Image (cartoon, rainbow, N blue to C red):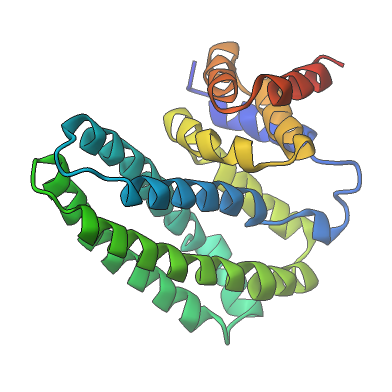
Length: 239
């Protein structure tokens, strides 16, 4: 049933857009995914600070958390460097493009080093202090990078590109994410979203995804949201 999921999901996500989405400002390529990335990075910093070299179960759990963050960042970078968005930035934010590219290159070098440290730690070598220093340095730089995209890049794209262009890129990005990877993103995005954002996101998925695929997404919502937050979304989707 995953075959044909992309077209259905595209239709559902489009249906979930707010009524005033004819305004370019309503289309933000970064806001929701950045919320999820920030939450994931903050969790990673906290977990890195609490690492115990003698706790093998804790090391394995940290390895799983890092794998989530690494997976999200690699996927996010691939989307940002995709042809459509890269061309839009080149056309409307050319002076910022070198800094964005340099930030992505720097992030990948840091992630490569972190992968090695985390693999050592999971394998039984105590790298806790090194991991903490590396994770905090990465997070500090990445927060700055996301700030540039939010405060400088996105306003330029909203001013220069049409709603249709921005929506087409948004749809291409969202529908290119396989359901298992989408579940990873939702694990961190949903708790960081507003109730309206959660409703729009899950409403689009409910409208566009096969039932068994939406069940996967809803299970993530159940595991990552408080009962009261989940009830708000459930009530709105049922209305």
